[in-house]
Image 1 (cartoon, protein in one colour):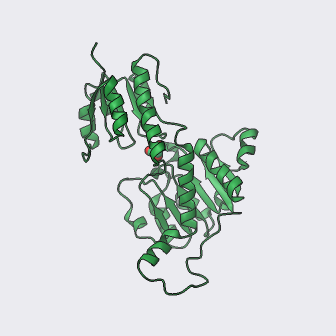
Image 2 (cartoon, protein in one colour; image 1 turned 120 degrees about the horizontal axis):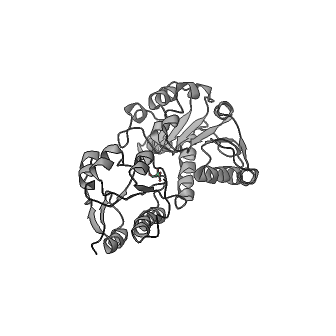
Image 3 (cartoon, protein in one colour; image 1 turned 90 degrees about the vertical axis):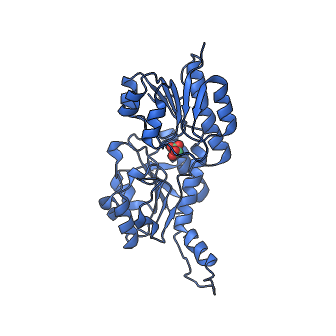
Length: 321
Ligand code: DGY
């Protein structure tokens, strides 16, 4: 029996690629190659499976080009790049990589929060530029993290891991807003209090966005929401770029209506809004919140195992539809 044809549209660990090659006829992107969406869609034709990241979309056009497609393994927990309804209608299973990246991503969210609140990158640039001449009481004086109020918008697994870090590690008061309120036991574990959106915005000293991106969540933080936040507050986004109106954010940061931001995700990534690039009080990183070697390996293995299990007839391990 011939092996299923699988498209691997991102560079992956060699051992994971080898494992895929053991089970499938693989067409894989080469190191240094870039497949724009059109290139990706063309290569998807004739494939039964695909291993992708958020860089590629499975939409009506991609599905129409690949009538043999049965499963798409997305190597990320967020799956806003998958048109889940269209995939279900076409009988295509989508999978993501939940759980394996929760703690690593929460660590990075905290790192961004601390770097932004404590002005670490501004200070580092200043030092490297040879501008440090003397100690000054107000040099890069930032905002405290310990004992402050941590707001979390989106209280899934990563939100809860952030809450535990804040509450237990840093003595923070934790407020959260979510589509659904957590059960009392989970709220206790996270020492987190459910509040409405208005209270979350008004009371948070540091607000972290970690909710999934959906059309309803588009620009959930825009000019009106930023205006409700404290001028001393920090905004951190480790969800998806489209959650924030970046022009409004840049304006608020430039006008001193918001103290700082830490952003790992961008609306047009890998392009970054030039207004953000021009600001000193933003810490920027290239979508690396889950990027540690063990976690990326676990994500890649889970995505591969989804394909292997599915084609072996045992079903997908972590389906989203
Ligand atoms: C995720 O897993 O959703 C991360 O953002 C990486 O894409």
